[in-house]
Length: 238
Image 1 (cartoon, rainbow, N blue to C red):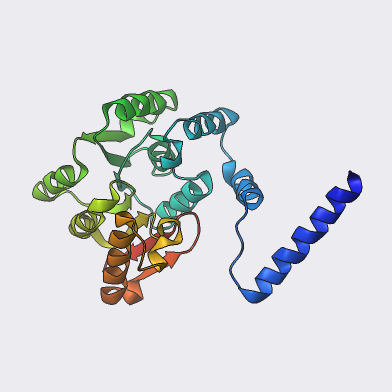
Image 2: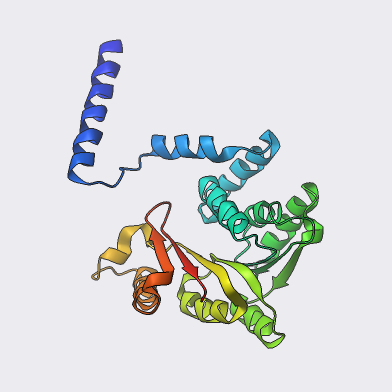
């Protein structure tokens, strides 16, 4: 058995090195993802436990990976974000994580239409004592964003992770809501890699591909795409 395990390890080592020589990009295995998440976890063991419990839910895949959350926190810190808009709350873990890095006077507005998600998120925020820094815009996210535009609200950091069919609408509204020098971050920009296949039957992949091309054709010098997680686009608002 030990010999089999050793041979398996040698084979995988050889295969990954060979693939790296053929392609500069990493081959992201489950083991590597777990390694990155372990490094990124930080926080209290209770927070990690809450995060893992969310992943166990039937729709737990909606949860932003914890390593990606650390990236969002870092971006928010770099620009000294004080006013954050999150489009898509889910169970509130990402919201809580962003609220924890914006200082005592910072504010997060988060859009969510699912009442069960809102209730669970409120409990989580109260548990970690960030509830005073977070307000919920309940209902359709696009409609909530339009109300924010009408009331001339402004944000220095916007994170979009909601209904993919509405991404173009969310982006257009975000560009109105974001201050000059602020960041708009869009999740699921590669949609499991299907954006690279024009023949795909998945409407979300086609819609995101259209959006990606729109972004890069008009903002090529002020945006970038990270081919990690499910793809993340970062836009610097002029």
